[in-house]
Each structure stands twice: as structure tokens, then as C-alpha cells.
Image (tube, rainbow, N blue to C red; front, side, top):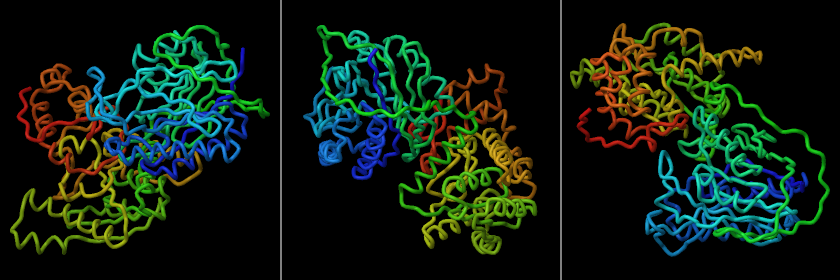
Length: 576
């Protein structure tokens, strides 16, 4: 069998940064060329970042992208890398708007493409066929689909090239891979991380390998982009489903592997398949060590996703530091630990803002957290700030409670304005679901690190992070008291969350059924939940949509995150 040396580059692009992203491609090409690779593949939209959303409708952006592809091909040739075949993802256009059947909007002017660069030129191009329009994806509206499979003949092997969603759909280009008798299938991807997604993704890759009788090389981008986190986890699987190589999650990495592929056969091509011959000279190929990363456990994967999401949001948007309120509770403690892991403790500023109702242990737990992590720490009591407003407006009850949260928000935003910090809001998914937050108060901020983390998982992550520190001989960052004490907003004497909410293990399970599984109230009751409780909690969820619509974004780690995953009307009168 002919042998090919494949290189898969997990790069971390920034949307719109054509110069910086091209530099990443060049770095990967230099490393791949030095390793003797015959073909280098990078992720979907690696040249422009992903998702580009409505940038796909700007002719100037598309023209700049096309120019960047051509310039990249020239630069590869000039640097003596032209004999390396490079597959890179980018948008192509502008094209004349056209409607192909019922497959996309008639105003789309772009295609989601993979271009093949060789010897200073773009020698082939593949346009993505299947355009997802679910969850966070909106490609159906902004791209024109392709209709032809691309096959590269390289060193006596036929290498088929497709893009992301094309692997997930039966038929289409995947069906033609077997008909074309390709030996290798290269799939370039921008597949966001979700908890347990590998339980779906890897089985899909192995199934396609056995179905098409090919070696499947799956390459994914890595990094945070707004509320999405791309985890890499690129993998090469042979026709029996065995893993030949695997890249680590959440890290930029070049995965290089030798594959023994079926030799290309002469014969007529099936319909809707094009083939391009690529001639590459024989080059010295240094010996390769096995490169098969192992996945960490579920909690570590989630933690790493949250850390990377925050790190890239801070860095890619030009912030140098973050500020957050430290209440002594579990949510702010976990957010502070995530922030320190993301950007270093020196970039994290914590503010304790005790009120007249704050317990002594809340203050001491915040002190303890700050010392353990080594972050910048200050104390700003709010009682004397709250009292004049409370007295002038004669506030009591919930209005007085919310005033305390809003004064804290003013303090954090003032620190942001003075020092350029990004304000982190520390609410978790459970609180956001039921509206258990004060709008313009504790919800204030530009980024929400645990927005998609249910309360019970917050505790799990805290325990895992402390265990991880102990295993490394480090100080556990989160005080045991913050993990063990009953959670409370401390906006009135003796307040705890369970005054108005059921136990969190019950609440999270109910919310999972109603929000993630999209069950109606009767169906949720059918799972064994008390009807009165279901009516109460689902009512809270429905009424809190207006708050969520105004909230900060945060890293998506689930299949049903608040935001683009779940788009419901604010003005809504539920019938079930």
C-alpha cells in the first residue's frame, strides 16, 4: 500500500484576523514540511475564524478572504513550502445570489470552502454541501451549498476532501467517497465543544471510516470565539475504526501520522466528483513517535473549556484583566479560580462588598479564597452607600434587596471604567433559568464564565479543581467552607436559596427535563415531579426570558445553552 504522511493542524484563529490567521497557517506549514508531511490540513474557516455569521454577506470581507488565500499560496511557495499540499478552510465569494432548490436563502453570496494550495497556486476548491441551521449554526441562511466531491490524487492515493457537516449527513458527499474509491477522507471542521460530545463525534468518525472503507482524518479548530469553545480533539481513524493518532483537547497542536492507504485505481469517476492530480517530490521523512492523546475525565474537560473560553474572550478582545465580586459563595469562588487558571492570578481583581446582612463567614471565606489564589483583593462595604437611596425612596422588601445587588454592580462597573477590567458576572445556569438574579445588579458584566453550568455541576467542578490541586502538590484554590455551606444571596437576615427554591438536585433535574429535553409540563410531571412544583418552576423559567435576553454571554458547554441554542419570545403566554 502507498504511504502518506498527513499533518493536521489545530490552530486558534480570530474571526476577521486574516493576517494573524495566515501566520498560523504558515507556522503549521513550516512544522509540517520539516516533519516530511505530504499533506497539511487545517480546520474549517481556519483563515478567517469561525463562525463569521453575517460577515458572509459582506462583499468586501469575501474579497479580502479570497485575496488572503491567493497570497497564502504565494507565500508558501516563496518560503520553499510549495511542494506541501495544504488544505485550508475559508469563505469564498462574492458570488451571484442563487437559490438551489430549497437549500438556502436567495441572498447568499458566499460559499464555505476548503482550498488546496500547491506550488504557489490554488489548485482545487471544495464547497461545503450541507449547511447546518440548528443549535448555534446559521449557515443555511448565509452560504450557497456546493454540489461536487473533490478528490486529490497524491502519491498514488486518492484523498477525498469534505467540510464538517458533510460528514454528519448520510448520502451527499460521504456517499460519493465510497463510489469514488478514495483511500483517505480528510474532513476539516469547526465543531464546538459540548459536554459528552465525544460520545457522538468519535463514533461518527469511526462509522464513516468503516462505511466508506477509508482512513478518515478529522481536523478541528481550537479556541474560544464569543460564546463558543472549539476543543480540537483531531483524530485519524483507519478503515477498521482503530485510532491511529489523536491530538489533545483545547491545545494548538500539529498531529503528524503515517497512513498506509489503498492505492488509487484508474477508471471513470462517478457523477459529481472531480479529481485533481498533485505531484510532490520525494522528501526525507524523519521517524515519527506515536501521537495518541487520551481524553481527561468529564469534569476536567468542562473546566478546560471554561478556562479556554474565558482566556480567549479576554485576550482576543484586548482586555488585560478581569474584576468580579467575591461573596464567599461557591459561584464566585469557582469563577475566580477559572479566571486565575485562564489569565493568571495577577490579572484577577476580586472585590468583597459586604452589606449589613453579610455573615462573618462570607467575608472570611472571600478573604481565604483571595489568599489561596493570590489574586488582587479589596473590600468595599456597601451599607453606607445603600442607606441614603433606601431611605430617600422608602424601599423595603425585594426592592431593598435588589438595591444592594445594584450598588455592587455600580462598584464593579466603576472599577472596570477606571482600570479597563472586564467585569465577570458569576451567575450559574440554574439561577439564570429561574431568574434568580438581580437585573443590573449581580447580572452586570461582560462575560459569564459559568453561564452554562448548572448549580450541581458548579459544586462538582469546585471539588474536582481542589482535588486536581492536591494531586499536583498545590494549594486547593476554593475554600472548603464555600463548597459546604448552604448557598445564599444574603440580601436579608438568615436568607438561603432554599427559602424560595427546591433543593438544587431536584431543581437541576426538573430544568433538564423542561429546558434541555423540551418536555411540556404534563410530561415533566409524568417523570415524577410534583405538579405544583412544576407549575412554579416552569413559570419562573418562562417569566425570566427578558432577563436572559439582556445577560452577558458565556462559554457554551451543553447541547442547550441559553442564547443561540434556545430562542424563545419574551412576550409569551404558555399553554402547556
